[in-house]
Image (cartoon, rainbow, N blue to C red):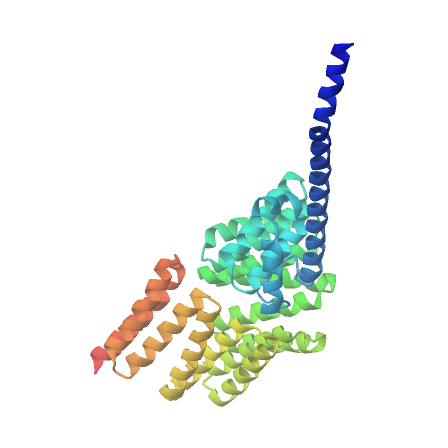
Length: 387
């Protein structure tokens, strides 16, 4: 009787502890449920914000995310712990996050997201996603000057897309492989890839892809010195882009036509087309395109002998490339400024800009651009020595 009484006393004394533990467990579970609901809400918001971003990357894409929207996206991502990204985010969301960073030339961060997506795609044996990821990774590696890695990943993407009969991804990968070959100096190889991509786009009625293919072929013909064919292809591409209302493509082709006229020494026409291109890039917020053609306008003025205007445009281009942290463009602009000072006979000033350009290329391992800068240095030195 006494023992039973003692047990009742002990149970009574323990009751607050048991109730407290039960309340704590309930509160913990409610908290976890709230956290899960909050994370789900964040992910759904993120998906809505990022929906306009394309899955498959090609260099000619028009920006669809403003800097303000990107900051909202970054803020949403930071609300979720990094280790949970691959667990909670689906493959398409990871790819779109990577492609958002690509739009702003943040290639390392973009590559990080694409690699997370690729890992998830391989685990689930999702061949379509694997092909899309490898295509995007290849294009990012191209921009990071890792051309051999880019070629390897793009060729794998092309084989997979062909196997699963996704003609759109196949056309994109062929175009991106062409870009790598062009940059390596294999113009015939690039032309072959671009023509295959163009052929696919025409067969499946992809007018946007057709315009991109024509533009790329125009660039190769320009590099080959076949200015007549380059002009024909740029104009055909321009007509399609104007027809479908693709402003980025319109600007690309106007700039291409301007550069052809520059090579033809029809400098008045060259300026007209290049200035039209810059105006469109500004309108759509494509800073890299704007900087690129500001540099080309600078080249036209340099050809005309107007070094003051040439320098002004090269400096504008440099400021934009520094703002968006596009190192390859920054190095090219510094080299162009160096050439202007070299023409002016200011060898020390020229060398200073060449050294800055070479330092950027070395710091960021942009090995395929060094020959261009060294060629500019040699050109200035030879011109100086002749005086």
